Image (cartoon, helix red, strand yellow):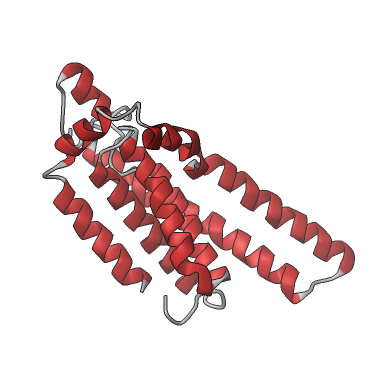
Amino acid sequence: MMLWLSAILFLAGALCLRIDRQAASYFRERLDTPLLQFAWRITNWAKGLPWIIAAVVFYFAVQALMAANGETPFLRAVSDYSLALLASFVVSSIVLHTIKIFLGRRRPRDDFEHGLYGFRYFTWELQFDSFPSGHAMTIFCVAVVLSAVVPTLAPLWLLLAGGLAATRAMMTAHFLSDVLIGAAIGILATRETLIIGFPQLAPPWF
């Protein structure tokens, strides 16, 4: 399922390259609407640092508990899932930032303010960092791990991740294709990290 979902998002992202500027302009004209104001309030929930800190805290807290009181299946599971999430962040970030450096896409604000649009291939300049979206990648890493923890709620985790990722395009921080490709990277990298590095955590339907 996750493999197919990532493939669909990759394809959707590629198709959205044709309408990115129009979509960004559409969202820009509606930044003062209630929906867009709500997006401003929740968009940082997809930011990477709080999730990284939470995973590190959970991992070391559980390690301390197991050292003091002994290991239980629950504590071992929390430890493994926390470590798997951190590993997923590392793998997906390497992929995402390599793409950013090689492709070098301008942000929507460059188009709005200066009329500058598009990719600047192989310039190695870090300010051209729109493609793909790191926020989208992060929140889909979280959603995939949560889907492994509670598989029955997988549609909910993915839907919530999709909504948070979409705020990046709605706020014109990214183009639509940036968000979709970032989400696809998060799903695929986390799936492969679980299957290869933590096979005991990956559900068969992954």
